[in-house]
Image 1: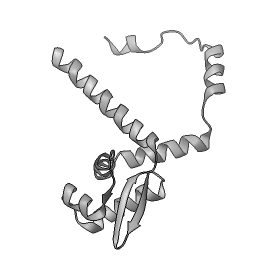
Image 2 (image 1 turned 120 degrees about the vertical axis):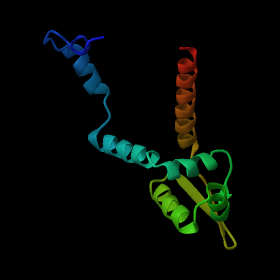
Image 3 (image 1 turned 60 degrees about the vertical axis):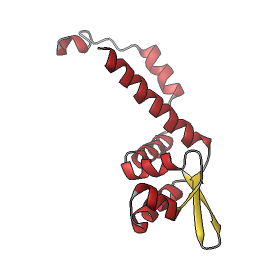
Amino acid sequence: MKKEELICQEKCPHYSLINEVKLNSISREEMQDLSEIFKLFADETRLRIICAILNTELCVCDLCELLQLNQSAVSHQLQLLRSSKLVKYRKEGKQVYYSLKDEHIESIIKMAVAHIQEGDEGNERR
């Protein structure tokens, strides 16, 4: 398809649709918060941590061993995830265990993985 075929050839905004979208849009503040969450997901190390604790809680030592990262690197990423309310922690003696804050984060990750896997299946058929 040619580039010019991908853009409107007429200047005719559909104001009823535009107004409907405006009515159902999230606020500017919510948009900024959403952007911050996706920035956190954009880092591979943070994603690896989130995926590691999708179904279970792990202590920092477990995460370090699993991800082959030093404690400083893991702790730094956990701090960012904790301050954004994506993960929670509990202390047991000297150990600190991390898990996802709620099922929303798990759903986002699982849906994204399903999307990627569906795309991969479609590419195999070509």
